[in-house]
Image 1 (cartoon, rainbow, N blue to C red):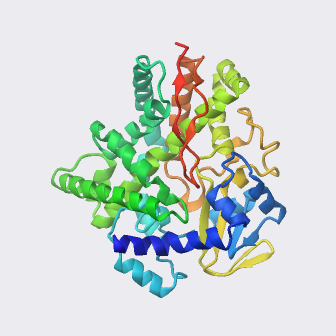
Image 2 (image 1 turned 180 degrees about the horizontal axis):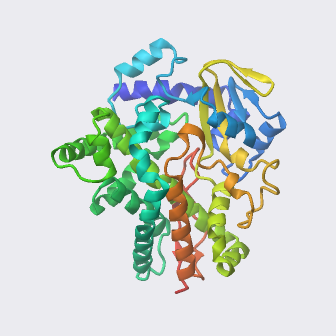
Image 3 (image 1 turned 45 degrees about the horizontal axis):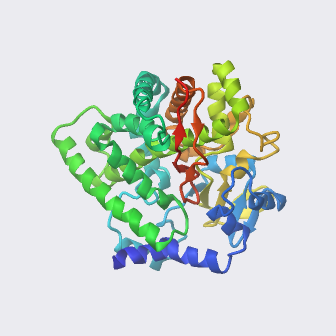
Length: 425
């Protein structure tokens, strides 16, 4: 556990001490920790916007400008923030290498999430076919079947938890089938995903970090066993592709399998949960969807814009880069407020208004962009339309039993529980 504590200190502890102590009242801390817990453009984001399109806070460049965020996400001169990047001092990189337990942490290489080309291209090429338009079209029928089965089960639960009993179950069933994992693993997969999700936050507490890596040790053990089984008897699933391609070593296989597992359902769970909360609190918008069901794809885009699952992302300059009228030095960090971009009044008129008819809602950056854009965005959109439309068509009088309980995460906006009463049918 000493090694784990050293890694926490280097990856999270020092930043946490700095942000909580020296920058406690600063805008950077407020944006990173999401202190006001509100949807939309918080006061901190608006203050950043007032400072200009790109501002520097406590040594970090920050932008809430839609055009700049989009440009930086697509600019290959900026890379993902990984603990082994060259700008990290050599003693820190040495200590991290010495304490590395090779856990399948989605925020550390060789996870595709934090690996830049050419390695990133190699990983993405292997799995991209499973999320192509053709592959997603083939999954549509199965997504409908899974949704219908779950809605049937809700009949026996007149007061279900719409996160546990519905929103989580739709995407975990689909990603399990894509990866070739058995149905009896669904609850375990959810546990792994929920308990490791805090790792996407910055400046974690020691307790949160320890709990997350303890979960990853279990994930590692499972995938070691599963990969051995596939090596002996290959299947036709995506995990088999990773294992039998001959292009990845064992660590790369585990890291990216775990990433696909987590990313394959966490984003969609949040999309569905956030969407239910928004639509039940905006009955006029739900009435529009009831009268004009062809608006559901637009509604999903507006949910993603208005209450996207991820609040911020970060990039590092791989060389000196001119952005607007400022030069960003190589090794500098740029914090992109995706929430701020999605509420940019220069792009979205009256951005604080939830409007399922918004003509340009799909211009949101909820799925990030560039080489690190969400691989499963088509699947998330498909599951969102099918699941939410089917839920409200079957239970048109559905109501929540009070405010849903949020997950205590800084960078992911999601709900932990959502008790409801099903009065339709």
